[in-house]
Image: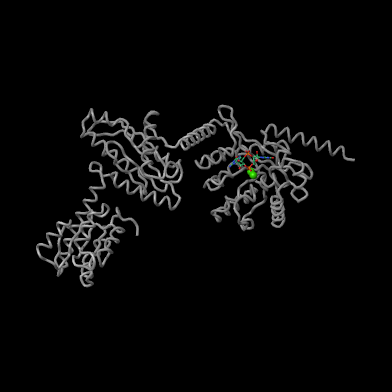
Length: 572
Ligand code: C2E
Ligand code: CA
Ligand code: CA
């Protein structure tokens, strides 16, 4: 049975050993509350501990414990003492009635039952109990849940999070300059400010959350089921913005700010007390750092959030300032030493001149959606460079990496189309490198997009093949041209039999499905020879060419033409 202490529907427990009376009572109240039954005292106490009744209808004469004894025991239990006990009995002597009230009963209903009157009296007690509960669990000034209700909700949220490996955030908010307003403008204005703050906070609350007033100008948000730290940070930022919007009270304008400290289950702690303490410490830190800000308790979370923030900020300005570069790596047919394609790889050197690897910033750009703009920039640049190479006489296709987020973007196809149009590049000289994950979800949509790419003449490669999605069925359903054998298999193929066997399998698969093959990360002549022997001809890797800027790529291609010309001339 779930813990029902703060459920909305009132809970009523009928304790009665006479079946006929039980039937009458339950018919009288069944639409007023959620009803539980017990036929004897011990059973009643057990059920009450689980269902936490608001009202108990208690017979006096029962097998085992008497109604009086049950009532005393209920009143001695801190979890149950708030239940309103109504005695229902045929023992109508005055002394019984007095004893019932002395034991803690609130009313006495006589048998035989007058059903409409019984119902009306129970209804009145339920209403009283509801009001008492509301007063006990809510703050009188703002109407928000108070610390008692918050404590209960936090316990529930932690219990649930433990079961489902979830995450719960506690955000403690304290107004920065409330004392000044309260002291200078008087408490009645202070109260109006607190009411307005409470109303703004409730409006910013997600469906699942609770916002409570702890007292003074301190409020706590409880957010169950939160996913990432980013989402929590975003929420805190929104709350700060809500509070810092000027207040107009009785014709005067007030600028109010707040500081927020955040603690997280399970990262920071597993118990309520320390979550509260940590959120408080973090809030204090936010004040020290200059107020009107939020702060995560955990150092590591704080540090990583800060780093991500900086990275995100850096990426946005790099994009605006056109600082991203596109480098190219050649794909070489090892049999005749011809460059058969190029892969475009984005490069970013930040303001301090430090090179930042795409593996570091692309995942964040995917999370924030910035990858769509970065991807558009790379695609356009790659199309321009491919066209320029054509004009120089190198008719080789260029491939571009497409992230899942970019692929799913509704403007993706339009973007590809306009890049081709703008650069006057034929579709057949463009290739998209996508990972298996892109195809695994949303199959129909992915298929349609790929068909449209085909229609434009654009090729499709499966990047990092063998590392992602395990089903191979998609290979025959999608219009795919190339499988790129992931570099992790190539790296260890000479020392690890499994990797070698996986490469054999991929090559067989490509042959059977008539797909082209590219081996990635080829660094040594031995790897290249082994791949050739297995039947994979096209290689990409440091052995042949590092990723280089387009100008260098032009020289690289030119030198190879000369090299080819020289080698052909030297043929016997
Ligand atoms: P990827 O698509 O698998 O790209 C190949 C990566 O392997 C590149 O790393 C390349 O520099 C590296 N590489 C090439 N030859 C060798 C070799 O012989 N040995 C080794 N160990 N590595 C080699 P890079 O440029 O750091 O890119 C990393 C990943 O970032 C890429 O993996 C790709 O997933 C992503 N990425 C790069 N540029 C873009 C882009 O413009 N858009 C998107 N969405 N992702 C990109
Ligand atoms: Ca790639
Ligand atoms: Ca790859």
